[in-house]
Length: 412
Image (cartoon, rainbow, N blue to C red):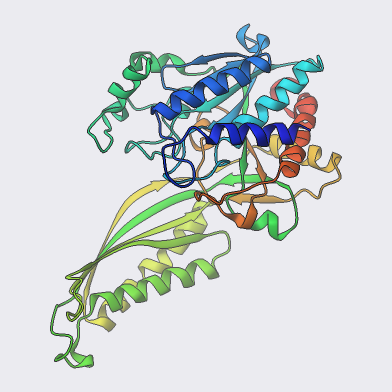
């Protein structure tokens, strides 16, 4: 059973981790080098020729891809968050390798090339940068990212050089738009939707757009025991109102989620009314209009909160990345493959970012979600079953064999 092979390989890969709970495997670390050797071996067994590229990606190509045939790229990332799980990212590396290896073993020839990539840096845990590898393939890599540093002051450039990579060669990694059929990623859902529908797999419609805001609330510190309740300028009460407003708007807005993830309270003393709170708001939605409308509903409420709590509130829009849609032909191909295996096809958007956000600048993208227990991810208890991995492998096998019926570059 391919699913058991994938499951066992992911157990193997999880051994390459820093000490501590879960899996901690950072970009360009010793653990990265160890897992690279393992992935190289998997690729060789699948009939792929592996290589470590200038951006720290582990790349495997079949003979057609090496000879310049139109090529489908598949893959995901090998790095993790601190104390993460065994399946986030690595499922999308191990599963397509196993599927391609099975096709190779059975001498089933596909009418296009295959390239599988284990991207080095998707999580951005070690450096203040992310999507280094996928941006390199898409041709959108910013050389300034090489100057990003880790907690020890080591730059990405130095770490790449120490890893045996030449960062000066990164511009040459850009793939040909004309020759690339698309990018497909298999990934755990990282949410509870599939489990709620009792479905092993699902079709991703879009990767979410993300925006972040910093909100500074300025009140007035005073004695907690002597200041009457109706005379207070409590910044933390205003922050609580904002937290509630963000939650309310996101619950009432279909297709949007959000969180106040960070609060810094000052003076943070047991008997002093808080005089300032620095908080963050993150909003996510695949459709820009949904996110912008939600943002407006939240920010427009801040004036009333400030007046009601007798505080000043200032905001700073610190980050924004637009969501990207998955290609219709890739979604349709996945739906046909899932249906062929007598599974109800469910379409859902991804609330997390993925390498597809960068790859979309190069080619059409698609994503197959696999059910995970309790929707839990970025956690040591992250879990899938070998049975679900096997269903995903069967679906991917069928998808690849039927790809020529759906891909415009092959049908046209």
